[in-house]
Amino acid sequence: MGERYAIILAAGKGTRMKSSLYKVLHPVCGKPMVEHIIERVEEVNPNEIVTIVGHGADKVKEQLKDRSQYALQAEQLGTGHAVLQAAEFLKGKLGTTLVISGDTPLLTSQTLDNLFDYHQGKKAAATILTAHAQDPTGYGRILRDHVGIVDRIVEQKDASSEEAQVQEINTGTYCFDNELLFDALEKITTDNAQGEYYLTDIISILKEAGKNVAAYQTDDFSESLGVNDRVALAQANKIMRQRINRGHMLSGVTFIDPDTTYIDAGIKIGAETVIEPGVFLKGQTVIGENCMITAQSQIIDSTIEDEVTIKSSVIEESLVRKGADVGPFAHLRPQAEIGSHAHIGNFVEVKKAEIGQGTKVGHLTYVGDATLGKDINVGCGTVFVNYDGKNKHHTTVGNHSFIGSGTNLIGPVNIAANSCTAAGSTITQDVPENTLAIARARQVNKDGYADHVPYQQ
Ligand code: UD1
Ligand code: MG
Image 1 (cartoon, protein in one colour):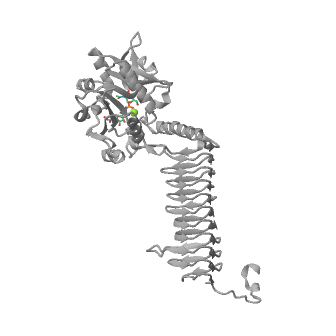
Image 2 (tube, rainbow, N blue to C red):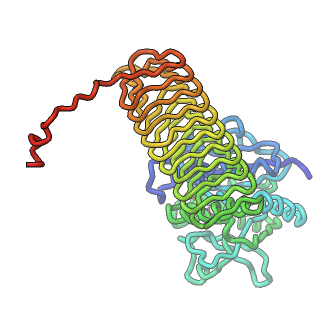
Image 3 (cartoon, helix red, strand yellow):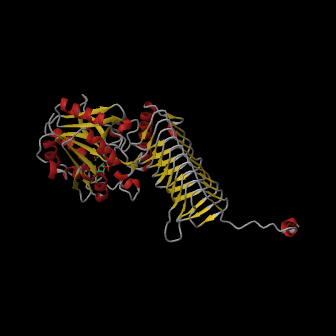
């Protein structure tokens, strides 16, 4: 099979994106495009990967870390010039080099494998990965001679109107004989409409040198979508989303409407889980089996165990244990840990707090910086008053306690197990076990005063 190398082109600014974020770092289904690319490249097991960086070099390196070597393209003089920067690592080595753009995130490793196989089978100096495009606008066109052999690639801006009619496009991915690649790169000029060193010119250079150039056409154009602007970015997201959702459905997850359910790449969902429309699952999220996630929920970097119901809620960096239910309209902020079979009801916000097994926080409550034991009932409108304007303070509530509605628990304070607070209490001192704490003014009834209430006059 010989050695395999890969060069990822990621130095461009992405002017057409009109963005301060470098193009290859724009996410598709939650992952930067260049991250998708390196994952696919790794799946074809190259001996070395070189990523060409320029604009945003530090950010790209931060993303890919030591999964790649890096060659700096200080000035973006074109894709041919970009590949040449890898010479310090690869020039003169024997083997096959995959060149791939950082902006084609939908390519699959199966297609890359097929490209390698085709290249080897044809004993070619270069093999272009091509596709048939319904609308080829913007792509380089593959020009073949009268017997169908590849002649050259012409860029959109250099194409005659006749050439522009060609629907077979260059995906920007190629296999090259490594030695011939670096020899031919020396010969590329900037004699074209954009004044750039085009990698695509290498095809005619190799042909003129009598080398064998091949083209392998994928049957799925959508894989080769090149993201140059935000219209294509949205299309790429849509295609990737369909692929991801299809994969989950085939593994036993029910989607009420997969077209409006937004699941990042890499998220795990257990079988028999049902997901309603408008749901976003993002980042490092894991969803268990037999869960129900209802419309418009957003779950980010969180773990939801089996048999959990999430009703139209926002959950960030949190853990919801088996059998619990959350919402509707609850907000779990970072470090909320909801115990098994616990209940978090409507308009409840939880932050940096542990809620024990079977505990119920049913309505209109804020729980921040707290540890709650098991089987506690927290009444409606309770506030864990955790912030004094400078510092955050912790509150603990012991097992089987009952917090009356409208209680303010002023942290730091401890409510021991089996205790109660009377509704409307403002608790500033610890409450011992088996105790009822009442901390509110006594009611005074003023006889006859109702006549003095202005609105009744
Ligand atoms: C390129 C191809 C075109 C093909 C299309 C497929 C050339 C000349 N054209 O056009 O035939 O149909 O991809 O999507 O190759 N880059 C650098 N340094 C540079 C210039 C670009 O690293 O100096 C990187 C970019 O970051 C990008 C990739 O190369 O990841 C492709 O560059 P881009 O400007 O997107 O080329 P296209 O116009 O899409
Ligand atoms: Mg492009």
